[in-house]
Amino acid sequence: MKELLDAIAFLKRHGPAELARLAKSNAGTINAAVRFEVVFRRSASAENGAPRRTSEHESAALGISVATGAAHAIGYGYSGIDIGRAALRRARLIGSLRSGFEAAYERARLCEKRSAELRREFGIGAGHWAAAPPLQADKAAAYARDPRSVPNGEIAHLVAETSRAVAQLGREVAFNAISAFTESRHELFIDSDGSVISQAFAVSQGDCYVVAQSDGGGVQESHDTIGQQRGLECLTDGWPEQPMSNPGLTDFSIDLARESCELAAAPPLKPPAGEVVVVTDPHFNALLVHEIVGHPSEADRALKMEAGYAGRSWLLRSLRDNEIGRRIGSPLLSACSDPAIRAFGHYGYDHEGTPGRRVMHIDRGIFSGFMNSRATAAIMGAEPNGSVRASNVRFAPLIRMSNTFFMPGDSAPGDIIGEVEHGYYVCGNRIPSIAESRESFRISARRVYEIDHGQPGRLFRAGSVIGGSKHFFMHVDAVGNDLRLIAIPNCGKGQPMQVKRMSNGGPTLRSRARLAGGE
Image (cartoon, rainbow, N blue to C red; front, side):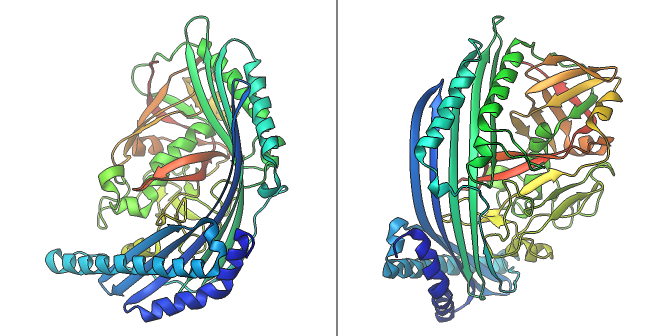
């Protein structure tokens, strides 16, 4: 083998038989799976118009999962192995698969033993596993330019010229940092039930960070991201397709810098007393749906598997006391997760080999379902819905959002604002502050406009929306037809921490909430 992609072809031919042999020869194995991943990335960054760094990275890793046991006492084990270019040696690759299986099997048996002890002592245990039919699939990446063919110098030139253009806007721009990368990722999944699934992805991303200051002493820090599951063309030329279109990196960065200068000169919001009408734009709603619908709808979080460090879910207090089938929002409000949409959260199959599919979380105001794994689906009496993924093959997969968003309605955004006698138009997002079970929130915005007689008026910075989650959802009385998804590059979850890319968003919404201000 001469390149790491050859190792994927080799494992496609020889991995299924080897994994089946390992599963058969280790007593009690219910299911075993191997994931092999090859990643190639080129990146560059610049600050204040000057190039800073470029990098080129290639990696390969194995991940092996094993489930063992019987009814009411099932154990799970995982082993991740960085192998790099040693994967080109066939004996080393198969040897790593075997040693990884042994480690995962040993952990699964220990987990199974502890599960049986807990069931005997307390009547509880992790005895759940949903079977799935074997699948064969081969999914290609989408790009005009293969990330492996893009020279480092081109990315470095793009970010340096963009940073220089931002710096030339004037002395109000105190600092700017621009970065970009283009990445090729190939994933292979094989399990002992007979699945062989190959998926390839191209990802390109650009980031802009700007600090602006005004003569009056105001300061505004802004950061935002664009990108697609495409080649570098989505940053050099922009990407027109909805619902996650983007301009080119240079235009995007200049627009963000100009907005930052305008905000630095604007006064901070002095919050009105009491509850007011708020109209929230798609960018603000990206963070709202992420924190208040997305994370609470991940079944592992809802089942309190990460309650010790990440909180619980307001949607499931227990298997007997939860919001499934109950009204949590206005009949105008719906939300879902859909990996089929070609955005940052797109994929065909999750990391348990289950096809990804749309999961309705809120259906016309009624909470209707969670993202789940094969284990949590069995606990909750549901079908696996393809929602388990890891940020890196070395890590055990977790239940993660894909493209999670509020669904569009029929109203024009201008009409939604025009019907407001007095209220506030809240745009962009910055920082979330969320209650332990996400039953309430405070989310800061980039821009807040006062609405006076149906017209956006005075601009403020440093404003936040404060609301009870159910209260805010129940008072939604208008939903726009302007669905837009926002690239989310850094959703963190798990111990050890996994950082995952996804897309969130929605249309314009109108509801009621309190506002907070301050610097």
